[in-house]
Each structure stands twice: as C-alpha cells, then as structure tokens.
Image 1 (cartoon, rainbow, N blue to C red):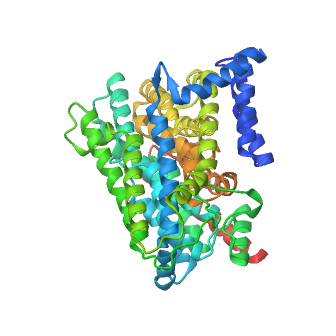
Image 2: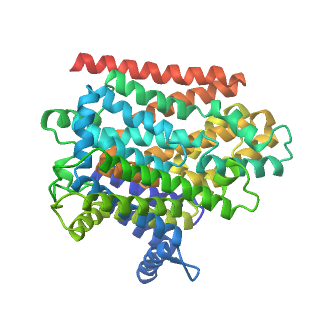
Image 3: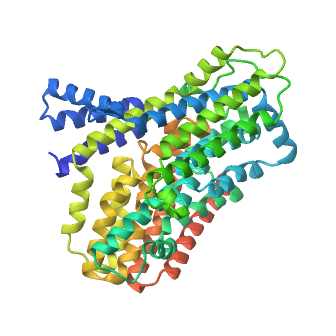
Length: 516
C-alpha cells in the first residue's frame, strides 16, 4: 500500500476524527494503528510491534540516542518549570497589573503577540513559545481567549520565518534552493538572491498576516472563535473549562507571591532569548566548516540544543529570583512538579504527532502526492496554483512544512525548468506558501502544537478556530497564483490576493455586525 492512493487513508482518517471528536490523542492513536496495520498487511502482532518501534525510535534510532527530540521535549519541561517559578514569584501577576495600566484596550493587548510574532523571526519554535510567555499575562488580564492568542502566535510565527533569510527556516530553504538551481543548470540567480525575489510570490503568507490585523481591528471573530471570545469576556475563562488541563495551565496549584515584580518575569524570558540566540550562533559556527556569515551560521545551527540551553538558563534564573524573595510560599519540589505536569499534555500530543508522521512517511504519502504532480499533464500557467494546493495537502497530511519543502521544492524546480524556466521562482514560492498553509491546518504540526502550548490553549480548539482564517488566506492565494500563471507577473497577483482576503474579511465583519 506504500506510495499508492491508499497511503492517504491514515492521514484522512485522523483529520476526520480530530474534527468529529475533538479528541486529539484518540484520533492520533487510531491513525497510528491503522497506518501500522496497513504497513504490516493487517498482521496484528507485527502491527503492534511497528507501533512500538515507531515510539522507540523517537528516543533511540540507529543505535544512538535521538538527542534532537530529547532536547526539544526537555525544553518543553524546562519551559513549564520556568513558567511555574515566574508565576509563583508573582512576576506574571505583576506584569499583568502593569500591562492593565499601560495597555487600556483588548485591541492593544492583541497587538502585543502579533507584533512580537513578526519581530521574533529567528525560529518558529522559539517564536511560538517565547511570544506566548510574554503575551499571555497581558491577554489573560484583558480576557482574550487562549484560542485567539494561539491564532496570533501561529499565524505570525511560520509566515514570518519562512520569508526571513536570517532564520532557521530561511537558511534551510536557501541551501535547498542552491542545490535546485545548480542541478537544473540555472545560473541567473544566486541562492540568496532567488530567495529574496521569491518573497513577494509567497502569497499565502501576506494574506495570513493581513487577516491577523483585520481580526484585531475589525473584531473578525469567525465561527468557533466568536464562541471562545464571548466566553472569555462574559466569564473571564480564557480556556475551555470543558476540555480539562491544557498545556501550561497551572490551575492555581500554588499562590503567587505578593512581593512579585515585573523583573521576575522579564529577566527569565530575557535569559531564555539570550541563551537560545547565543547557542544558535555557537552551534552554527561549530557545525559549519565555513560559517563566516550570519546566513551560513543559521544554516548550520542546532535549534533543539539551543532551545534546551536557553530553557536551562531561564529555569536557573527564575528559580534563583524566586528564592531570593522573603519566605517563598511553595517549596522548590512543588513548583517544579507543577511546572512539569503543566507541560505533559503538550508532550503527549507532540510524541503522538511524531509517531503518526513516521507512519505516514513509511506509507510514502508525500511521495505519492508528488508523483501525481510529476505525472500530470497540465498547462504550465496552472503550475504555481497546483503546487500550492498539493503542497498544502501534503503538509496538512504529514504535519511538517520542512518535510514538504524537502519533497516538493526539487520537484517544483525540475518541472519549471523543463516546462517554463521563467516560472521557477514562483513555483518554488508556491511550494513554500502551500506548506505553511497546510501546516496551519494540521493538528499534527509541530508549530501548531507549540503555538497552542505557548498560548495555554486547548490544542484542538486552536486547530478548529484557526482553520477558517487559513482557508480565507488560501482562497486569496489560490486566486493570486491563477492570475500569476496567466499574467506572468508577481506584484499584481499579490495585490489581488490581498484584496480578495480583505474583501472576504470585510464581508464577514459586516455579516457579524448584522447578526449580533
């Protein structure tokens, strides 16, 4: 069943179950089991063995410890502990009280994560978690739902990192583009130049960012998002009380210190940022033989170990600040335990997402979709549009933008080089745009999981509430790519994309005003 139409069954089944039941662990688990049984011709014993092997290889593979995954999981634990100490010290409370004085409106509170998401462009993981830590005390005080905050985080993190050359994503993409240009004998552009020229053709990214600010200034709460925002305003409950514990939710397990100051929150976050960025630079220099430029450093950086080092620095400083206060109200073991416990839901979801991603990879779902593209006889004018749609579905199914980049960018480059070399940059940009679109819709995406974690939102609530905005941006981008294929231009189709997204947003805003 590998590499055939049947290979899409586990991904589709998982997506349907997630939407129907809103139970992410159950849905992922069923998807993993179905995929494993398909890979073993429905042999129960071999199927369960494959499930165990898939879980085992998250931590150990090829006889070695899988340090990358362990570093990321440990970072989540460290982040939970840091949050617990910042809360117990009263730092989050003090920052929230300060924000209420300085930030007078819910609109102003919503602008904080949106602007920070654009400013912190180094890495999507780091963006999602750091922005959540800074913004959450403010948005909680202004009764902004966790689902709303998660949307702002997710819809600025991946979009901004995918168009930033100085980021972990940008460095990876630029390196990949360099190989594609060389393999196809294209000497018109250098890799960095090609990346920069591709930025305006990444239509989905700009439509998604536009919708973020339309949502803030027009109160563009669509569908389930309106329900979450109304509950937060009416009751003060920023998370869904029916969904149990959510990542980062400490559930008032200890009392905040009355002597808390803003620096009890700001300094640990500063340590997190400084420690992570410093480690990214150091590991980039160590891993790159000729890492002499900022771009080459970020191309070779080890993001997971950098996050771990930043998280460790934050924990040490947060704990030290807590215990310099007079008579701390909770012991170190209690605060640490509560911090770890708060992050367990995110860890469970992430591990299951990795497992189903591995199973889908073994089923060669991505390869099957890519093969459909290469074998289809289409008008070259529709190539960017088709690549956008296929990349979106691939990222949605597999939960990985990077995996989609790795498969689809070379295919897009080869098809464009053979059919119409003038379309090579728009074709590559369409792959990037589709990958981010699918990533925004996928419940098994790392960045989607970490965005809900950073916001302290229920994961499926975040997926469901973000979906309408992603679809609107995708609709605008789809029309843009069709216009691009017809006109051969980039700026005009980009304007069309933004106009379409803006008009849809205005229409929804007007309908909401009439209805409510």
